[in-house]
Image (tube, rainbow, N blue to C red; front, top):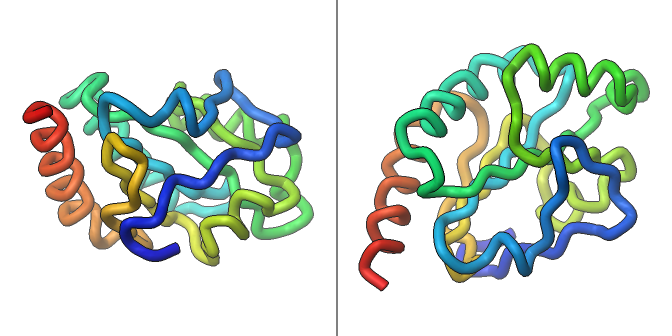
Length: 150
């Protein structure tokens, strides 16, 4: 994906955990953070602890959607994904992208990866890996403040 591209629609055939979302009910009031992760990614665990901190700090000032991107056959085990999501305190909607439909729409290849969209649903920042989370938070805060102006 390129900056300023629109938030892709989620497939209607994709399974979800913790509720589901559509492009229509995401766009509108606050920025949207789409978080690609995998049950077999140990880096994802530490990174999600930071995102949980942001949810505690910023509350409903942004929406969070997880996309579980399997990296192996073992990664499509729904019970394993559910247990890991529970362990990591992931209460946000999680798309179970077993067929990599969403992953392909985003042209994503790595976990963790973060796609930050403004309230109009336009891509404003991409962050790959866990090392740039400070920069991602700065961009998120900028978009949250931008949302207040309108």
